[in-house]
Length: 368
Image (cartoon, rainbow, N blue to C red; front, top):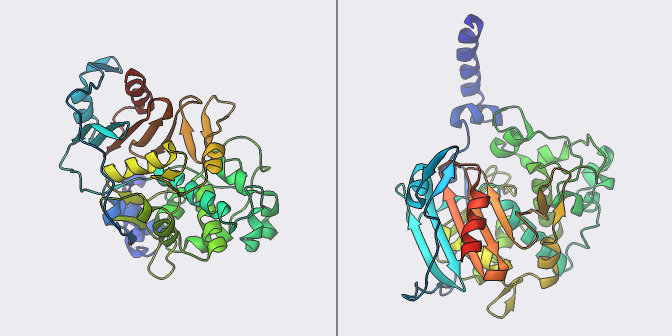
């Protein structure tokens, strides 16, 4: 214990002296939190044209919210649950009608919130658009077709589909508490392209499901190489300017010098505009008559793959069952969609508060 007391100041001094590298940034900023959109440099995506407005709640429309929810032997009312779990935004939309909209903890309708891994699903959308346009050949293309620097490491065996479904076999840790791990290098690193070029494989591609943020970061670089456009610019051109965003958004980048977007996380937007990304896939990629991403890609993306542990995942989207889908991020950021009932639910928070959010959202959707 005594040696640990002496070691901590040394580590802190080392971190401060390494402020320009990912380890230093990890110690200075510590664990990721809901204010991270203000810490990192970002590229802005601007709202264009008149916003799409979900209609106001009809007086005759009834929304069924749970009267009580039991969490670890404690029972909360729904309002108590939102307050005690650090929720900052909660929306329920059905048939384009905004049935419930609440903001807490100092947040409001116009407050942008980091999406964390919700951004993985958005990167998947951009992969689909690049395939629709012919910039990317297919999901069966090897990674090395777009990132030839990875040929010596055996990445000619890794396909885009392996990355989409988290079956790549890449060596990279997903621990959020290890300053030397793969996620820390991605989250706090200042040259992500350099990091990707140094990747290695530890398992045969196509094997077991292994959730790794690095897969999505590689997908982001593939989109950029294939289209010749930076990821935020491609998102702006192909999606954001077409879905009636009410507010500007941002996508955090590694540095001003390299401008690599953190494809696996760090898309920052307001709750009402996250709901529009859910609506895009609810409508099979069509936005009020304009096909943003092909219906074929949407259907392929949501074809559920079940891993050996019973989890359901497909092309960077999660599922509680084959009939629903959702984007999920750190601290309990959710964009949940149940197509059969035309329901979209958005939950954003400062923390998870509970582990069962997917089940809570599913229950609300089923009840309505």
